View 1 (cartoon, rainbow, N blue to C red):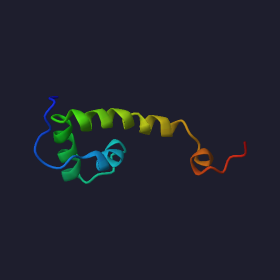
View 2 (cartoon, rainbow, N blue to C red; view 1 turned 60 degrees about the vertical axis):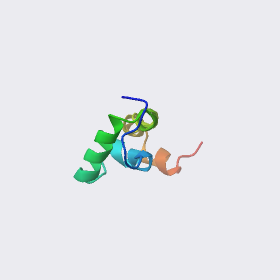
View 3 (cartoon, rainbow, N blue to C red; view 1 turned 135 degrees about the vertical axis):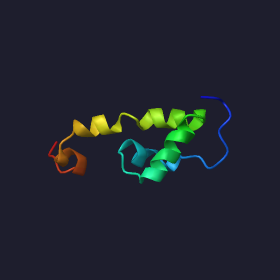
View 4 (cartoon, rainbow, N blue to C red; view 1 turned 180 degrees about the vertical axis):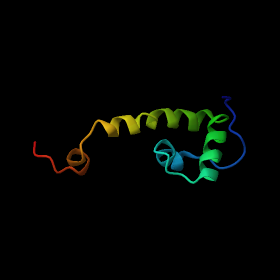
Length: 69
């Protein structure tokens, strides 16, 4: 990665869907290409990259907030 982002819009708003593999193929490709050249978006990606693994550790009740304390 470089310090100068590649021209074009940043992809921060798409990162949640990107890590959950919920983007259309063309959007997924655009995000992946942008992350190769943008340190700011790359850092934001690293903050959310483990989300799918963390979600897998939680029960549906925990995710919905229905579990009694």
